[in-house]
Image (tube, rainbow, N blue to C red):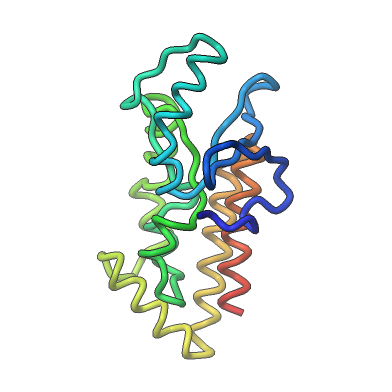
Length: 185
């Protein structure tokens, strides 16, 4: 289940689905988003879409909706100083249920762009596990820890800019990065 600390400062509502919460949608007062861990949202996706049909007569196809990590694995691996990314990615890190053809493609193409990779990952190993292992090694070295902090700050700023205008997702991403920065010290 996603820890509640990721919703700090975000107005949210509870649902009847375990580990799934509602947050305002930036597109309007009558629109809601569902957030939770990857596993909790995947388990509840069918119920959420059935609820959309019951409440607003809006029929949705399940394959049109994706569970999107608000902060991507590729970026967290670069600063995974505890080595817990694999577990946290499925069980704890915040996700949002978004439309595949509009939002999901936009988010992943922007956050996973070649330019972003070059900017933040220059000189880092290609594989996620290797980057995570390197972050754990660097964490033990005070001089290298400074580089980890700087990388986390830059990534945090990138996410802040990416979600500009979408305050709930911006705040949730900021909470994730603040936790990373606190962990690095």
